[in-house]
Length: 165
Ligand SMILES: [Zn+2]
Ligand SMILES: [Zn+2]
Image (cartoon, rainbow, N blue to C red):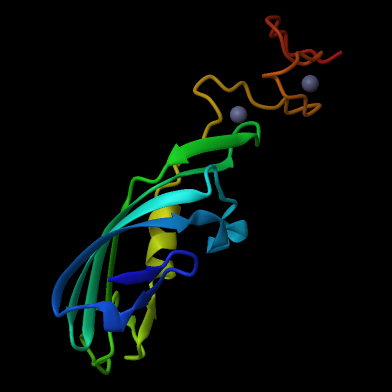
């Protein structure tokens, strides 16, 4: 099984009918994360794939081992997380019929299949609900915006009098 490690394009002619397994070192930088506020911490990821190929249908299962960062929910510094979701995608070149599983993805039936969408999804689903740069992040002061992990300001500190001087 041959996969282009940059574009994540699978070479259909390298597949045999039935199960095809492989492990690939992929380049995580090329995946275009800007919109999701994601950044690969290390450029390399290990992608393990099991592609079940039957004429017009490809069922891809896999796992990506990679580490990404997104913005801390409290202070906006990088919050690092591992990719933990499994990859699953069913591609089919059969015409879509009413009642078909809506999660089935269209495949042109050509010699190449890009599985980038399925890999992106697994990364996006791995983003924690409340990403934190560290467990005890103190966040930003909501009055002056000071990063309370790095400094104290007139609005923070132990005296919670409620009076802002
Ligand atoms: Zn933080
Ligand atoms: Zn402040």
